View 1 (cartoon, one colour):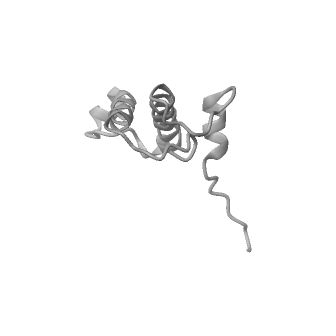
View 2: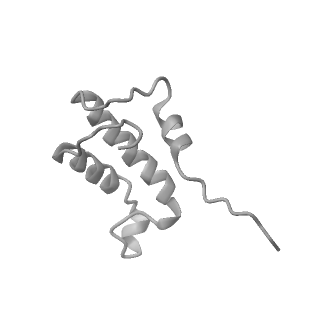
View 3: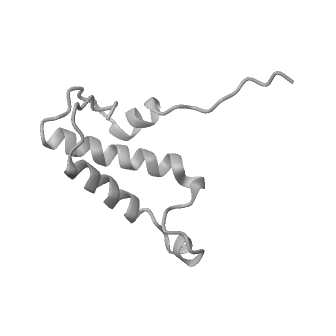
Length: 88
């Protein structure tokens, strides 16, 4: 939502997010009894979900911020980077 600056979250956006999440569940996840992708892929999957939601916001004219160029790269650039200072 931050990337597109949409003021609204629509049912279509939720559906796009859910479909993207479901499409990222791999056979290996299911074999291990997981119904979600592995947490090892959380950043990758989160970025894909963001891209899908941005696409809906754009199509419906809800995006108040236009991302020029490479949307996946822009999304990844906006993601929080968990880097901590080592004080040891």
